[in-house]
Length: 372
Image (cartoon, rainbow, N blue to C red; front, side, top):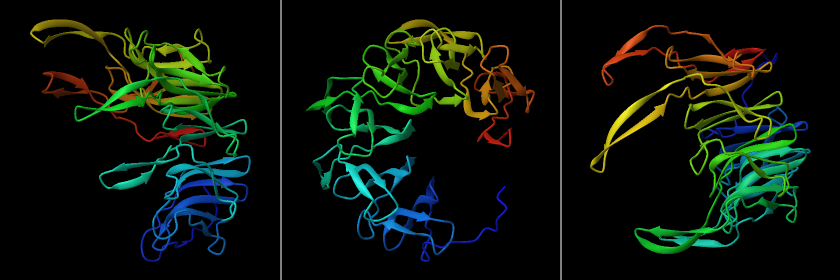
């Protein structure tokens, strides 16, 4: 714990400033905060009241630019904000008002709805620093939400690769409104040993695990885990770097949603362990006929945290309920830590006993220990 005496820095005497998104860049800490005069804008601090100030009123007046996704890139702050003219786009700051500037209006122009005319917005998300280059996702209006990178210049802020090219017909209340671009929707950008892994969708494989070295040629599908167009991963799945190994959750037809790992190759992308083996058959009446099917049980790992090179997480093995587990990346080394809430309880909906669950939440590493 920090051995300093906490003291209040009141940024908004008339109400709550709600500071968030603290990022250290050199000796300065940047954050987003709100006051009655400027709205929610970009601030900086050196930890003292005298050294805490607004960086720039990006959206002049009391309206808010709402800075977010703050990232340190080579000593410069990169972030996302809306200046009211260009929509929500990519910005950078050196800590001065003059040095806080829009990098590129990725989705220029405006759109009109029943309420008025507004600027388009590429809405950059998932900002990640990899080897001194900023990677993120954005929607330029032509390619849908895809994978982008930036070196901090307008010319150097470019689409890496359109993973899901083409368009689809868009209908509003049954009326054809034209073609819209397909979008791979990259998500959960995670750096591991000089590569970025992420979840994305294309027409052939559904939503699966992808990787990139920052070039178009080096951006590719890692493995079609759930073969065909079915989704092996979803936007609710997670990716976690544990000392150079990527752990993640994925689903396939035989074993359900379980713990996986990857070294970036198809052969090295494997299920770590079927924590909840087995499944159940079902009969369902659909469109006038009885349909028989099989659903594999899923442990659905959640709450991943790296503790001294060991992955800790919560999982449900369908015997002990949702409890705390750990893994070293091997099947033998993937074990329940403890059944904190043993026993079972009667479930009226299934007319059977179901195991109790301690349901660990908010797993956090502190001093080499997993807290929850």
